[in-house]
Amino acid sequence: MTKFKTHILVCGGTGCTASLSDKIAKNLKDNLADKGLENEVQVILTGCFGFCEKGPIVKIMPDNTFYTEVKPEDAKEIIEEHIVKGRKVTRLLYTDPETKEHIADSKHMGFYKKQLRIALRNCGFIDPENIEEYIANDGYEALAKCLTEYTPEQVIDIIKKSGLRGRGGAGFPTGIKWEIASKNHADQKYIVCNADEGDPGAFMDRSILEGDPNSIIEAMAIGGYAIGATKGLVYIRAEYPLAIHRLEVAIKQAREYGLLGKNIFGSTFDFDIELRYGAGAFVCGEETALIHSMEGKRGEPTFKPPFPAQSGYLEKPTNVNNVETFANIPIIILKGADWFSSIGTEKSKGTKVFALAGQINNVGLIEIPMGTTLREIIYEIGGGIKNGRKFKAVQTGGPSGGCLTEKHLDVAIDYDSLMAAGSMMGSGGMVVMDETSCMVSIAKFYLDFTVEESCGKCTPCRIGNKRLYEILDKITQGKGTMEDLDNLRNLSKVIKDTALCGLGQTSPNPVLSTIDNFWDEYVEHVQEHKCRAGVCKALMKYVIDPNVCVGCTACARNCPVNAIKGERKSAHEINQDACIKCGTCIEKCKFGAISIK
Image (cartoon, rainbow, N blue to C red; front, side, top):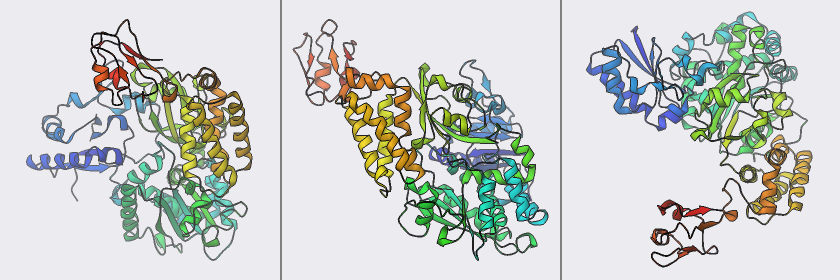
């Protein structure tokens, strides 16, 4: 076996792959071969490094040099300068936006300083398609420990004591969930991994599966041992081809190594895993709808009880956890419940992975200890708001969450604090908005998503959310009334109280939170027919200042609907009835004569 002196890690997550990171890896290998260094330096295509804003990323080990925004044509220079001559390629290093200093080691970057990678511990460090690299990083030791040292009851007790709560949204204690499933006896039980990640802007589970699929396989096997299940099912959306491929490779390799199948580690425990594919229905992230989908039925939620732990897949006891929850299991077994529970807050233990997106400088995948504040995430890890604009709101929890404001920046990220602030943890989507965002339109966007994704089974969600959307649309069209605002609030509360499943019950949260925190914007839309962010087109009016317009005709010549009239060298006017508010006139005017009122 070749022992390499240097390793070059290349981000192989979906985002970087879309930016040709696989070509970067190939070019690096080709240049190494040209220099005769292919037996001294190994190129490894890994999972996501997290710093998506600066991808594709190439990392040189063991000196921990971190190159950003690498292109395929940069491979030759990296090999010739860094590998052959020992000189860093300065232009590819991360540049601190404030000090303008080039930073080579990721440990000194603001993006990583306050992170603690537990669920993401192997992402970006190992080849996800090589099980030996996972094993070399303590992989499958936790499963071996469970099968040779602990009873199923002891495994459950460790998870209970750790304080791990479900990372899929509801935050139910994982150990208790396992305990309930273990006490329901049947000839067959199932462990299900929920990889149906449907929140807009969320890519946490996908990245874990792409970067560290064996950790999920190992965790599912541990869960199977704990509750008495011999069969595991991963429900993953078909839109995740790379994650599916790497899972398939990992499962195949685990079987070849005897880590799945019969008599694992010489014990009497049998366990195997199959994949089930989802067609992208958001509601199938709810566990009962997910189970129905796996059974080939319509993906609709059902009343509880019975809970899946009592009667789930094929009416057998079934335990459902999401990807991130499972990713924490092996390391909890290895390092102990006390270690994990020492991280985070009193009621929210460990870390949480977030997909940080929106109008923020450092878009990416982050993992922070519970208790970290929104301010730390947005301004220290996220690097602040893009283009020097002012922070306005942050949406946590996806369509089920709420919009928090500047007054909430010092709220600690944990289940209870976010709930008290009017939002929720959710699966981990975090969308940051600046002053160019209209909060009425934001609520309308999420309602549009919910209406589209509703399974239609219950009237409150099927009809109620449609009515909410129609009221919001009316308001953004400048036709709303104060009575509509009262109806928005009242109908939202009815839906929360009467919808069948958790997704329906939380769907009005974006409406309620924006009404509570941005009431003045709603009133402006209704009473003044004004959208301060300039987003709602029906409330916008393009006007030409006759004192500035020189009559150059550029606006009139480029208007796609001929809404601008005027003689050459005379002030022009815009026909408001014909104007489609496309903004072409502003773009073409060289004199700043056109503005939005």
